[in-house]
Length: 384
Image 1: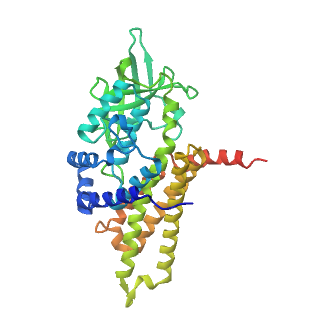
Image 2: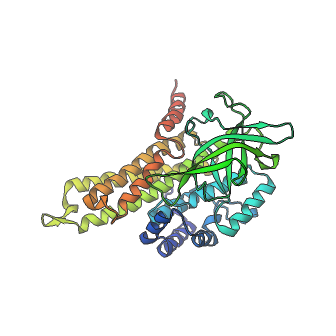
Image 3: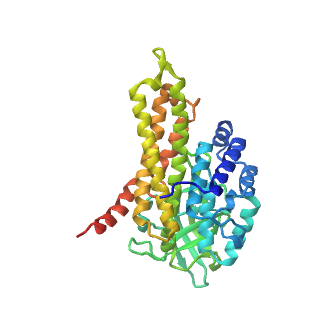
């Protein structure tokens, strides 16, 4: 087993560190939290530095790389920024369009992406009663006699939905019933009559606000269809495994940032005449935190390596998401505890990071649905 990073990956990490030191120090992160977004200049700089092109096919102007390298990119950006940023979401959105869109749609979206460093569309997949249970989705399109389609329904937790001019929406064909698996993706302009939004507050990840989106008799044309008619559910499932893996890469980077801060603090914080690093309870916390970081990192890159080898990761990615999100949240919470009252203020970043990471036990599939996915597969694997 070779755990060493390649020379190219080491250079990538150095570039990420330099970029974050220049653009994403804590003061700037707090400004972005208050502004609920990144500046256009920073998003464009990320793209021009080449980071925003990684994982995109070369023929589209991208920089092809393996999944392990994408994991390194994602982990280290979260580590050096000490924050969940929009960069991963932007890349995943573009990959969705590249995988499923027509040549014309891909060309249009890539042209806009290359201008701004951000996708032109948000992702409207979840609904109030259809998060983990996608079959409970009730948004529908109904074909009309003139060849158009009428979209009705609601989407929620749409990241950057109010800031971007389009939304990639998935809706059931004709019938909203639970057993109807016929779904289609649509690239919906947000300025169409019948489209409206309402902002939603959340406790973390303020750089990436999300909203609810409503569709009331919205008329769609066939050129807005993304991918094959009726294949939307299959497309939706296709990229979940990679998304979940990179979500954990983000969690890991943030948890490592908390570990960096907490482990340094214990050497400086003096109580009863000596640093708190000398107390066994603090040593136990650090030991458990480091063990969890090592375990998550090993699981993450094992899963990404399997993907690069063309091996199935259905079970492994669910196990990673279940263990990794929870373990990283625990590391961040212990960092807050080590800082004590100071950790509960806004003077340190560990409290902010802990709020950011906590949402990842829900995003991309809850802890509980990961048990459902992995548990069924494990029962089959060990059946005699």
